Length: 84
Image 1 (cartoon, rainbow, N blue to C red):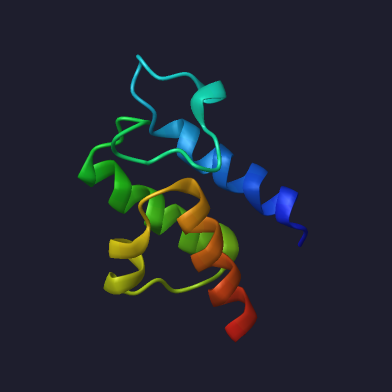
Image 2: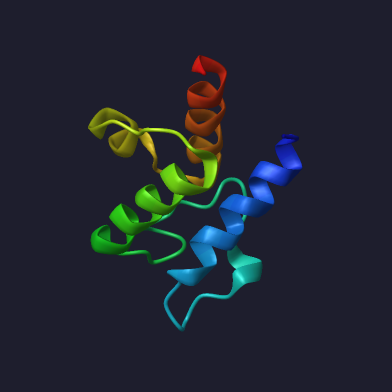
């Protein structure tokens, strides 16, 4: 899967959980999930679960702690996919 495909797939997951005051166009690679996109911690857990399903990977607690930005999520997804 190409990087752009992974990014689009991740954006599709994140956009479901965006609050009303945040637009899909606000999702950038350097966007902080909580600070820039206003995603709360409960929705962050849902995003992690959806990422696991969408990419067929397993994320550990330390992965979730490191997932601060969209780019962090991409790096973690790439690392998990390369372990397969």
